[in-house]
Length: 95
Image (cartoon, rainbow, N blue to C red; front, side):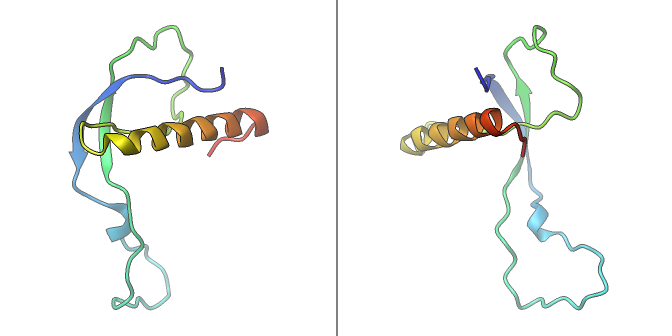
């Protein structure tokens, strides 16, 4: 199986978005331009037992948070996560 699903709970939603940050460069900044949309940052605690898996430090994962709201969108998100999982498995690349 190319991907594994672990259950987790959101412990904290960070009220900072990376799109609101500015990188120090030599270029002038156009403050009138619209910033790209960012994603919210969340700290999650894995509920499942992961002791049987050798997950290296710094491993990356994709996370989907499901709530009782917008439950009809969760099916689409599950399909997209599964497609990404198979893509990483078949093409041997991680994003």
